[in-house]
Image 1 (cartoon, rainbow, N blue to C red):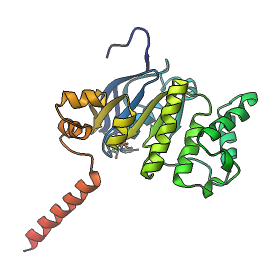
Image 2 (image 1 turned 30 degrees about the vertical axis):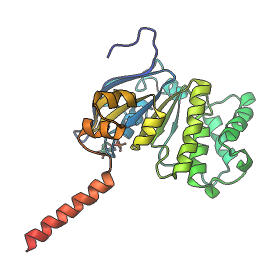
Image 3 (image 1 turned 90 degrees about the vertical axis):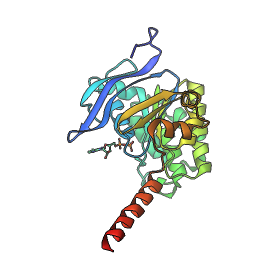
Image 4 (image 1 turned 180 degrees about the vertical axis):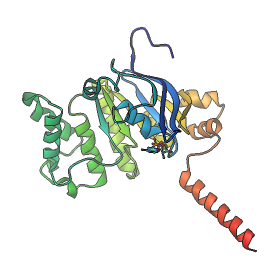
Length: 272
Ligand code: ADP
């Protein structure tokens, strides 16, 4: 991949590989994300999305390949890289026995947010995700959507240049999902913050992302805007484009159920 000469790319990934017990979960992927872009990794369960995010955010060491994130290599300059991003995981990593405000303060201390700006920034962000009125409530009394909003506020506390979100709306109702995306889009535009998220929801990738990388079995199959991918495959929706590119739909539960029925059918046939 040719690097943009004016360094417009905030993330550059070249031939990145992660193997577990000899099996490639991420199989030599290359891509770049521009500053200020909203970039989605779209793929079914087990495609390698979380493994990629973990390598980009210093949590996993690549087997091979190269990553440059905001000018640094995560494998070599962990601290510098960590300061440049915020992250929201699938599983809430908040402390349930602390209040919303205490969770924010704890994170601010961890990330060495200067004292003089700390309280103002915390108030600003809790107001932004509409949790300021509930700042003194224990997190264990929050709904799933409120927890996710608090995680997003916390992820933004140290003014990251990139926000990573791993399936940020998994398990949330449609209304809360759209609410969360509004916050993220808003902060992306106001602060020119790059957003990298993973999802297996077609509609989210289509609505939210400037560009989408379709990932399947550890490989990137295609990258482009939803329109690019639709045009390239001569289809009429992202879902059709996805099927055309990967040869299957993202309905792993349904597919699983059909496979089970087939397997059962085979057993019955064998018994007879
Ligand atoms: P996704 O986020 O797209 O659902 P993952 O990145 O979590 O996919 O997983 C990709 C593949 O790597 C899967 O087959 C998964 O079982 C495997 N995998 C992920 N983490 C580990 C691990 N720590 N040890 C062994 N295999 C793993």
